[in-house]
Image 1 (spheres, one colour):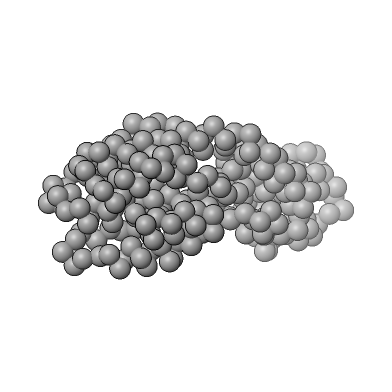
Image 2: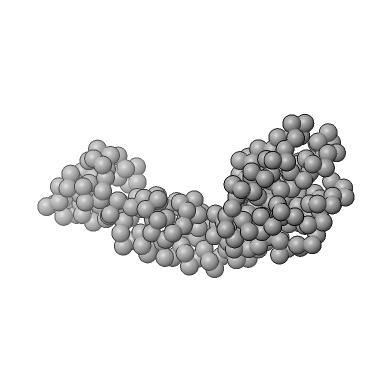
Length: 249
């Protein structure tokens, strides 16, 4: 029960490394090694998807190896690894859901008194579906609020050399999280949106012939004039000079 208690604590304190160390301590050289990075990436994709059929397919793939699935220690390590990945991802998404609230008694029984691989597989599948639905049900409103705050900040400060990292620091979220939230709400990347704002401002500044292209580039925070012209042409199909000519300037 020590590991289970640590997992519960980890769900609120992100004690992932300690949990991993305990899981590793159970490892037997005859047991198949679990790639936690690959597992975490796969579970992250599943939890962000609205198609739960992919969850069933993924879980089945984990429990399809008869050689290793016949070993209870491997199944236990597999379950602990999945739960550890879930806890880490929930923390990364700033979710305080305690996964053991799903069915604490059933999880304990399955992890420490394993019956059949099929039973454990079904439990893990249902747990992932439960978390997937929880995230989907709670994401829309929360994402909308956070995304609106982010876009207002960008529109106010986009000339101040904003980056995804600086925006993440401003709102105390991870860069991956704010990128995901922004894309979910507005359908485009933060960097692309900042570029659009800069090009829109560039068009405005170019209409005043007193503004030199070099100065406009500097105002907008581009590293050099050549790069500014390249980005401007990519966005408008015109160079800044051609844009002025088109507008009779």
